[in-house]
Length: 87
Image (tube, rainbow, N blue to C red; front, side):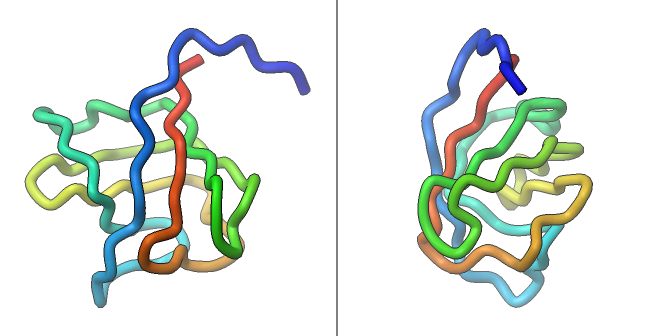
């Protein structure tokens, strides 16, 4: 499918956390408000999830966790990189 891209946010990386799952994981992002990235797409650019993308359903700025739906095929690993695309 073709997607019209409005903007790409600065990329980020996954950070190790015991609570990381395939649908909820900690990042190194530093946006200043909750749900700043909500409804954008997260696209992995490295690691086992390379080229997989999902819709962001929530962003918690206090601890930099992202939630996605549906879940990825596995939990991302520490230092896996990604881009966030707002379309």
